[in-house]
Image 1 (cartoon, helix red, strand yellow):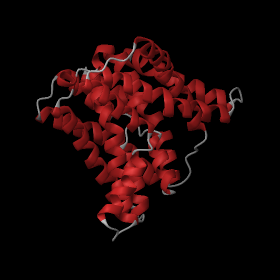
Image 2: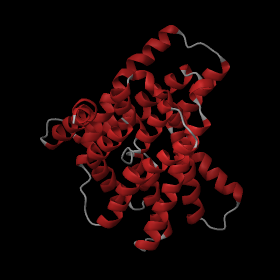
Image 3: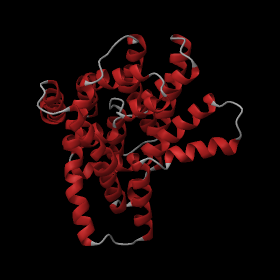
Image 4: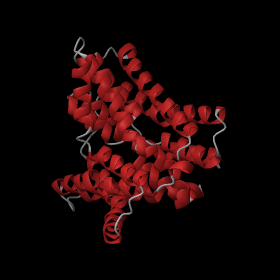
Amino acid sequence: MQTLLDVILPVFLVIGFGYVAVWRGLFPVSGIDGVMKFTQNFAIPCLLFQAIARIDLSNSYDPRLLSSFYGGAALCFALGILGARVLFRRDWEDSVAIGFCCLFSNSILLGLPITERAYGPDALAGNYAILSFHAPFCYGLGITVMEFVRNRGQSGLSLLRNVSRAMFRNALVIAILGGFAVNLSGLPIPGVVDDALSLIVRAALPAALFALGGVLLQYKPEGDMKAILMVCAIALLVHPALVWSFGTMFDLPEAGFRSGVLTAAMAPGFNAYIFANMYGRARRVAASSVLIATGSSILTVWLWLTVLG
């Protein structure tokens, strides 16, 4: 119970403040859209750029951690697609969008603050290692499969062009690549620039959590409940269980094990809806899954934190 009170509830209270503020008319929807654009396109990319530019690559990038997390994520993507196709008779494009909901964990807005509150700032190296591949891996996989099913028979060059165009318009991907460039080149970030980045970074997570609450109010769960429950089960239970199994099999060190399992245990991120909206497919399932899974994760994350100890 203490874990629930000390670690999880403060994060969800900030989300709740945003939800109530928009619900009661204290903060406009247009303002929430602006805050979300600020966090998604500026503040969070700054956070990722600064974290990856500073991280010790030799100590943080454990192949066992990345294999455990992304092996589990890819399997959940496949399970989501097959479940939507076989169980619910959705067409292939809808099925890919639903599979993406099972693939894309809310690793930034929920994973970072919950891991930090549970284990301290020094425990985030594994989270940042996962995050540095998260957007490129998930968008790369999702866009590739979606473009393949949408344009069966197109040339490999055309497929590569469509995937690359979508990837390199993503602010998170650009920030991650920039962070790697600075880290690997050894170029120092000028002090005044680093200080400015730090000011923006401090606002990133609280502003994003507040905005997430306001966004969730706009998407009411309607219909498709069986598909939504499938997404919630895969995202909140199957993915962390797979990472737990792979991490145990690979003898993953405790810090990386905790980061991997906790990050996998997060609800689908808002990017799941962005992906569905980008293709105009399964938008109601994506929006409702983000809403219901985020609320349900209060209890499931508590369960995983209890098991992790």
